[in-house]
Length: 169
Image (cartoon, rainbow, N blue to C red; front, top):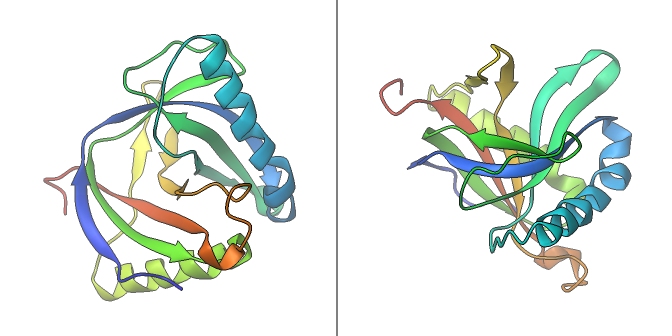
């Protein structure tokens, strides 16, 4: 089930993440373990974060493969070590909605949010990084831990789509 979509503004947000390229079929098996690796890295470097982990879909590649950053927001920018990298969500406007239910229905929830955006003449924008790379900003924030909440019908995922700088929308 998807909550009513909304638009809101958010400040820039640094994060630490591991970037991986996976197929659609590999998302559920290869990406979740990376959350634990990022958490362990943060613990090892004495960096606290009480924010939820996320998957950031950065690029869609050939053969139905995605470049995905799996990470955790942090309070201040941190230099990574190559494997765990620092990144930033841009400041600006975002469309968002909360999906309640099993992760296997997240693709449908994304499509519902995109349909709502189209009906409201809102377009997903891309972030340009310092090196000129165009990065998508479609994010899933995992608001509760499925290892602690066994019923998939109670899982909550915030789906967030970057719309651009506040003055563009």
